[in-house]
Length: 147
Image 1 (spheres, rainbow, N blue to C red):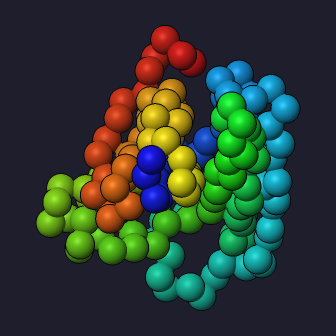
Image 2: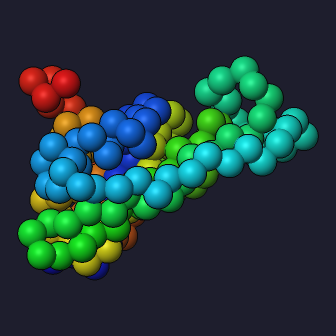
C-alpha cells in the first residue's frame, strides 16, 4: 500500500475516459465529481509558457472520481488545465524529465491505495507515474491493445 501515488497522463485525457476505464476495470457504479471552471482571461500571466487551445481563457477540469475496489472506497483526484507553466523544469532536467514537464498532461493522484490501480490507469493511457510520492516519475508507454 502506498501513501500517495501520482501520475501525469500524456496529453489531454478527458475525465469521462478515465471514469469509463475505472468503470470497466473496478466499479461499474463509479461516479465522477469532476467540474469545469473558467477562471477568465489568461492574458497577462507571464508564467504561462504554453497554451493548448486558442480560447484565451484559463480553463480547468478538476475533482474526484469515486469508486470501490472490492470493499474499499477510493477517490482518484483528476485535474487538467489548458496551459503549462513548465513548473520545476530545472529540477526535472537533472533527472532527465524535461519532456514530462514540457508535455501537455492530465494529473491524477490517489492516496492509500494499491499502486497497481494507478499503474493500470497509466499503462492504459500512457504517461508518467510516481509510485513513491517523492516526485521520482518514470514513463510508461500506453498499452496500444487497450485503446
